[in-house]
Image 1 (cartoon, rainbow, N blue to C red):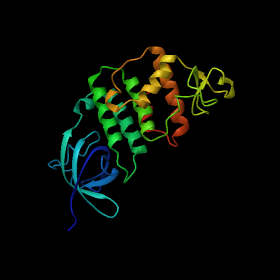
Image 2: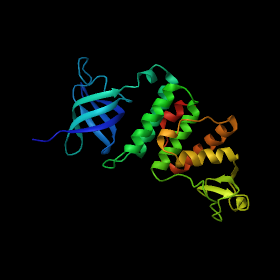
Image 3: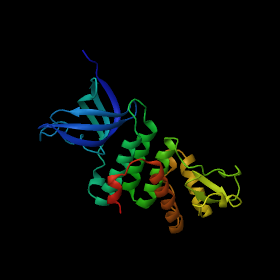
Image 4: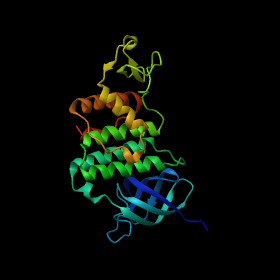
Length: 244
């Protein structure tokens, strides 16, 4: 008899299969991104109706097959229902799930990525900082967790850590005032923008959503991240189009 396992995770996506089943993609703390089938989840009286939707977070009881898992039970501790009541929040949430699905890997534990998702959804629901800032923080941090973040701590030309004033996508990081001309795509950064980038990359997840920035810094952060994603992601994100 195949032993059951219990994994903590969040549903990234759900798709109908057959007449009554669902195919779930779940980001789990212990085993990364997995595919699981929830039999009968589309029946009105199914125990899986509510928990087999995107954003559902909790424990999933499964047994493992050759190519996928089969769901046998669940204990959902947070459905993030408030997000479903606000279309703007839904769009941001779907984008975060899509990014997590892009970076998630099967068999690679995803504790930090799962914590980042949970913290980001909590921040969106609290409405204490702008959603656009939450988006930039999430984008940069998920790249940092994947080890593919821009080097904003030293000049990519000479290696010095002073007078870092320009960001260059072709240099994969920042340039100092003396080296700014070695790349033609450098953009001048406000010193507060540079500090914000450094803070997001180096800070623990629990301290990410605790600050606000000026409009100028927000504009520069968005510019940096849009350029970084365009170059370092080999696909377009459908949910990103909904954010405008």
